[in-house]
Length: 428
Image (cartoon, rainbow, N blue to C red; front, side, top):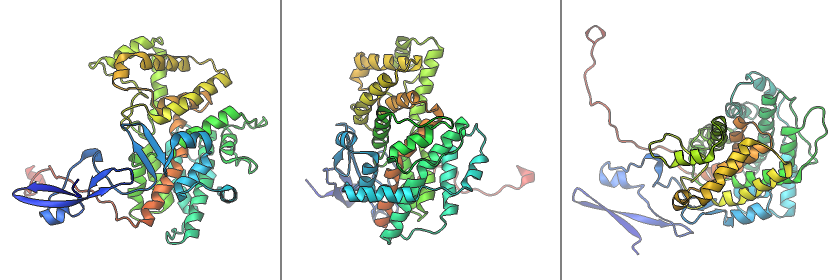
């Protein structure tokens, strides 16, 4: 196999090196194309065939349904690790030993206080504000309370910034939910584990003692692990490109939250529940809606099935389906929406049309079901996604800065008007 690719255009040949990844992925390195060819560029809307960087964080093979963080399979991590271990792995490259993990958790707990003045910012939002807009604003506002830029060449400063955001972000998530529910704000409990504390901060009612449900905590832990990173998706690419201007970590994360908000990205699990609610309002006939999904002339789209990257079963969905079944059984929830979800799942796994096209339920389908079962409002689903994705965003931002990657600056092909003379106002 040649280690070069040849491009022929207008009688000229140009050679470009082939880059090979550790999993044998191949890429043509065209960074000199514009210079050697006199201005020729490539165009790839949506960057579906364009690699923006080399990364050692996450490997994804959509054809085979493979997802690995730093070489560890998502199946093993979801079964054997907790979310804080996975966060450490993603950010620093290796699984922590017992002492490292304990020190990491202690350092996070020591930074968990959010300045009281942040409450004034939260109070300024109406209850009707979408939680993702609130979270993005609060994350951006953290910059005002941490105004010094991080020196990326200092391990201590980088570690400090990472610990601060891992400590404060769950508080912002919990405050966003409690604002929505009208609950008093809560700082949590340093005696609890990371995910356990998140659950307490979100759900403890003012007049009741907090009671831990292991099945619920385990499901939440798994959900956060499954969402922790997913290679160069829209929000992760946003974090990297914003950070490439040397914008700080908090500003880059705020931009990533805004990118995640969209219904084609992190908002997909919210769209699943909204679809299920619409089906219920129309009588709950799942067979009718499966038929509509197969009709090319029908505008209805089945949300939470298939995946733009995975061409087989989403490996995360296999894991979280088990957790969803356990949580629903443990909580004993009688919810017609969840019954509709089970009906759609059963039919999709048995209907030859969906089987042939590999339109299996994905992680958004099951995560929406679990979040609803836990009593999380639909508008908060994407906020939970952001909470899980936080360590991945941090890891990607850190890698980009340590690699000293150039500022992102895509090119374009201009299709507007050619040069034309200005027409005075009285002659237009």
